[in-house]
Amino acid sequence: MNDFIRRNVTNNLALKLISLALAIGLWLAVARDPVDEIAVEVPIEFHNVPNNLEISTERIPNAQLRLGGPERVVHRLQASDVHVEIDLAHVTAAGQRTFDLASQRIQKPHELQVLQIVPTQVRLTFDKRLTRQVEVHPRVIGSFAAGRQIKNIAVNPPVIQISGPQERVQAVEAAITDPIDVSGTMDHNSFVTHAYVSDPMVQVVNPGPIYVTVTMESVPAAAGGHR
Image (cartoon, rainbow, N blue to C red; front, side, top):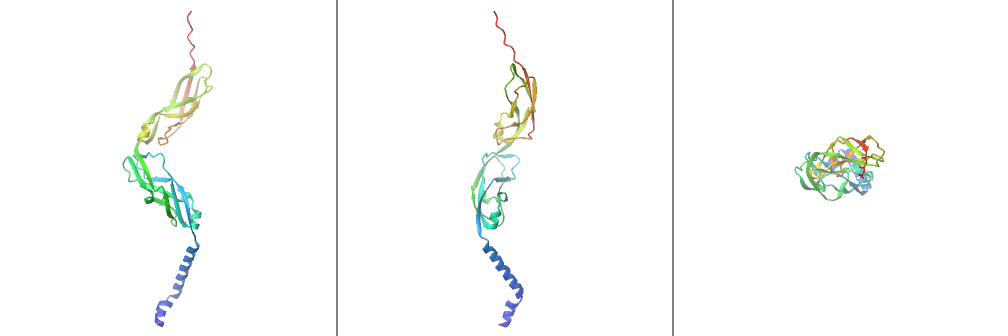
């Protein structure tokens, strides 16, 4: 019996006591750390979007997550610490695709667990990417001086490139400049402005300044009557 105790109990007794103390300390630390929950709302991120496709879904909901874990971690959590990512590498053609958010990559502190995610699915519509040129139409406002009218409006550059989902890009007739106030212009005046497209899904490629020169002239006198 003494040999049994010596071999299995007292052998390396110091190491065994240290291990036991560490285990008890770890258990106490976990037991003292209460569990808490938190709700966060974050935008859905899209990775590996194919070069020939565009997401044409205009309204994409945010992801609302309920996370649970140690109170000390929950209290330090910020929305920027959580990311919901959808990998689009396997999308190869235009059309609709449904993604299960629970199966997507959710980046978060490893000590927290995802208890709930809303919505559980997101449906996206994809369209072919189209880039084309459209004319720039200046938007001129203001009160002309008495006896003056617009003779000519020169726009440089006269066209710009736009890009986006094919169907949306094809529907754009022209780009419009910010309002140009020509009040008080007697001869000619030059303005620096910018052009925009009202469709939020269509982007201006390499946006830059638009230079507009407005030239005025006298209003022709009305022809006199004959006696």
